[in-house]
Amino acid sequence: MPKKILNGIVVSDKPNKTITVMVERKYQHPVLKKVIKARKKYSVHDEENKFKNGDKVSIRECKPYSKSKKFEVIGDVK
Image 1 (cartoon, rainbow, N blue to C red):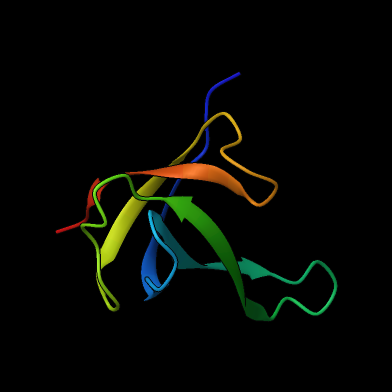
Image 2 (cartoon, rainbow, N blue to C red; image 1 turned 180 degrees about the vertical axis):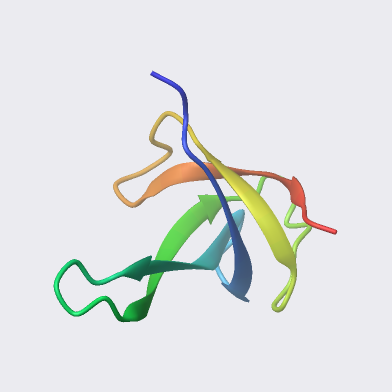
Protein backbone atom coordinates (compact mmCIF):
# COMPACT_ATOMS: atom_id res chain seq x y z
CA MET A 1 0.00 0.00 0.00
CA PRO A 2 1.45 3.42 -0.93
CA LYS A 3 2.26 5.94 1.79
CA LYS A 4 0.06 9.04 2.11
CA ILE A 5 1.61 12.31 0.94
CA LEU A 6 -0.07 15.52 2.17
CA ASN A 7 0.60 19.26 1.80
CA GLY A 8 0.02 21.75 4.59
CA ILE A 9 1.19 24.78 6.55
CA VAL A 10 3.34 24.70 9.70
CA VAL A 11 1.34 26.14 12.62
CA SER A 12 3.74 25.28 15.49
CA ASP A 13 7.45 24.49 15.80
CA LYS A 14 7.91 24.60 19.59
CA PRO A 15 8.76 20.96 20.47
CA ASN A 16 12.26 19.73 19.61
CA LYS A 17 12.40 17.84 16.26
CA THR A 18 8.60 18.17 15.87
CA ILE A 19 6.35 20.50 13.92
CA THR A 20 2.56 20.70 13.78
CA VAL A 21 1.17 20.86 10.25
CA MET A 22 -2.39 21.94 9.38
CA VAL A 23 -3.73 20.10 6.32
CA GLU A 24 -6.86 21.46 4.65
CA ARG A 25 -9.02 19.46 2.26
CA LYS A 26 -12.23 20.27 0.40
CA TYR A 27 -15.01 17.81 -0.31
CA GLN A 28 -18.63 17.89 -1.38
CA HIS A 29 -21.34 16.91 1.11
CA PRO A 30 -23.10 13.79 -0.20
CA VAL A 31 -26.68 15.04 0.35
CA LEU A 32 -26.47 18.84 0.44
CA LYS A 33 -23.88 19.11 -2.39
CA LYS A 34 -22.19 21.98 -0.54
CA VAL A 35 -18.38 22.21 -0.66
CA ILE A 36 -16.95 21.85 2.85
CA LYS A 37 -13.45 22.69 4.11
CA ALA A 38 -12.05 20.20 6.62
CA ARG A 39 -8.86 20.92 8.57
CA LYS A 40 -6.71 18.47 10.49
CA LYS A 41 -3.47 18.90 12.46
CA TYR A 42 -0.65 16.37 12.25
CA SER A 43 2.44 16.08 14.46
CA VAL A 44 5.36 15.65 12.07
CA HIS A 45 8.99 14.61 12.62
CA ASP A 46 11.48 17.33 11.56
CA GLU A 47 14.99 15.96 12.19
CA GLU A 48 16.95 19.21 11.62
CA ASN A 49 14.43 21.68 13.17
CA LYS A 50 14.51 23.35 9.75
CA PHE A 51 10.91 24.52 9.28
CA LYS A 52 9.25 27.50 11.00
CA ASN A 53 5.68 28.83 11.38
CA GLY A 54 4.00 29.68 8.08
CA ASP A 55 6.16 27.41 5.89
CA LYS A 56 4.34 25.29 3.31
CA VAL A 57 5.58 21.70 3.58
CA SER A 58 4.97 18.28 2.11
CA ILE A 59 4.70 15.37 4.57
CA ARG A 60 4.76 11.58 4.16
CA GLU A 61 3.38 8.73 6.26
CA CYS A 62 6.11 6.67 7.97
CA LYS A 63 6.78 4.35 10.88
CA PRO A 64 5.63 5.78 14.24
CA TYR A 65 8.22 7.97 15.97
CA SER A 66 5.96 8.26 19.04
CA LYS A 67 2.30 7.89 20.05
CA SER A 68 1.22 10.89 17.95
CA LYS A 69 4.02 11.29 15.35
CA LYS A 70 3.38 9.09 12.33
CA PHE A 71 4.50 11.49 9.58
CA GLU A 72 7.85 12.95 8.47
CA VAL A 73 8.74 16.00 6.39
CA ILE A 74 9.70 15.43 2.75
CA GLY A 75 10.48 19.07 1.96
CA ASP A 76 9.02 22.50 1.37
CA VAL A 77 6.42 23.26 -1.31
CA LYS A 78 7.11 26.05 -3.77
